[in-house]
Image: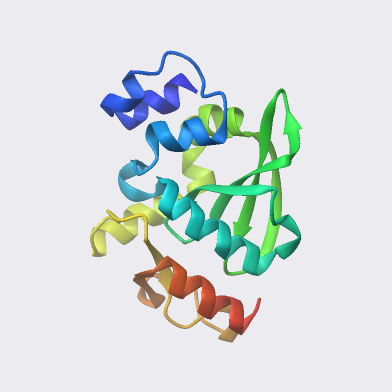
Length: 182
């Protein structure tokens, strides 16, 4: 987890010399920051609340159990599931906006942020594709935004850069949810 905090290179992260004890502590400490120049956002309380509501549109059965803690550049949301714990920390769920699936990462809050994002960020966050996006446009700087498909995958859209645009994450989730999975 300390490697993850060092990657943030933020004064708030430098104050922490141990792993956060809870999801709320993580959000309070480093919410609003990003990794890899906008490829992954750690949500502040306001965006956490909004993204949690988006997750509940997809999976209402998680109401009362999840807290959105981050989202990637493609609008997929990562949430802590307090109904399932591992080593005293909630497991992380992956809410895929385009496939309309919820996947269990089988990792807890600390392991996911402390190990997976730091050592496997390329694969998990598709950083090669994000780099191509930033070469053709600007990196994401606002946690309320993501890169969405202009023609949704469910309607035959491609995953190519020319079918992507920067959009509001709430609007993207709501529209994609209405269209459904491919």
